[in-house]
Length: 227
View 1 (cartoon, helix red, strand yellow):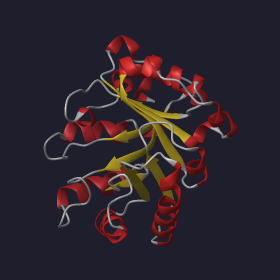
View 2: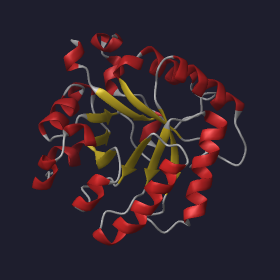
View 3: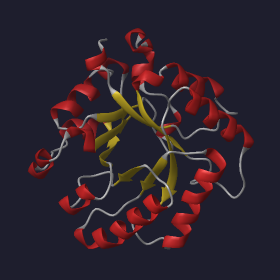
View 4: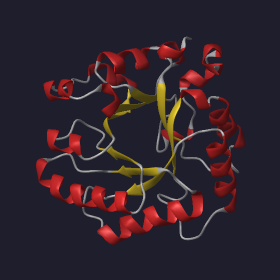
């Protein structure tokens, strides 16, 4: 795999390092493929610093991996101060570089509130802001963050997904697709489809069920991905 062809993976690895240390070591080993890793201790940073997560985060940073702290916006309904508290805890406890805002609204009515939230998290030091809509949102969100997750869903749905025309007005590195329940035979397909649909960042995992993001990207099984 050439350097120009390397995929850029945004990895939401929602499993504790003590429960699956092999998975976290694999992320470090494949650091050259990683755009960023989302840290999600307990649907956010948790109520107290977790020393195991802190040690794991330090190891990833040493390997040059960008870290994003998970914060749920409740589709824009969660109080701003609660989201900002999560952002501050992630920075203080785990030294993250930015924030992954989950369950972000997609309609135009939510743009002003998200604009204020993104402005606030940047003032708190977030150098990278990712909005996870899980679907293509109103075009007004495109100017708010560094990266928009415009698809999150299963492999079957991904193959049938349609990309709105407005996305072509923005560079591919502004969009990400997260796909689960991906069979081994489709290991290369998600990256190829994502690029064709104007998304330079993606993650494809074999996991399914309540937490598919406890599994590693399918590309990590590819010897060519050893970098």
